[in-house]
Length: 194
Image (cartoon, rainbow, N blue to C red; front, side, top):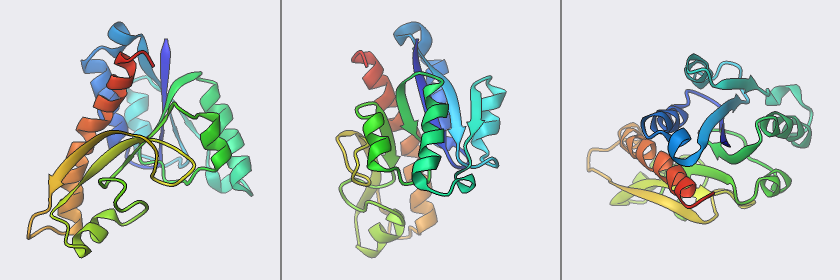
């Protein structure tokens, strides 16, 4: 079985979209793949409830308990590796990962970012797109590399910027597209024999 481990920090809407797609499209039967675990760096992450209700293993590795990023990542990697992941998926995981951690999962570590990369890496993407006068925004699924919000692009979705858009309205429209392209990117990797 190809195990998918998803890392979250909050509500986990992208994680939920991936879980729903895996069930609806029968990834277990078609590709021998399953969402095996959801791990969060926050005990109050709402996505843990969603995963638990679907009998997906959950775990919390609270980054605040550690005195260094490296010690946190060592414990996080131990939790991840217990599930023997074929794919590690960042879905709203709000921690910057060290190059060593990224190297450990090289080629099987994915992220989604709410912009059309390479434009607007980092935070406040919707505000920055509006301030720049962009006519289009969107989202990007990419393989993670040591450089923040870079790496080979797997999927993108384009969303028009409307004249009345605010950060919130643009973010909401982009998020609906994230829920489409993240499962599609993962399924594409599974179909190619990941």
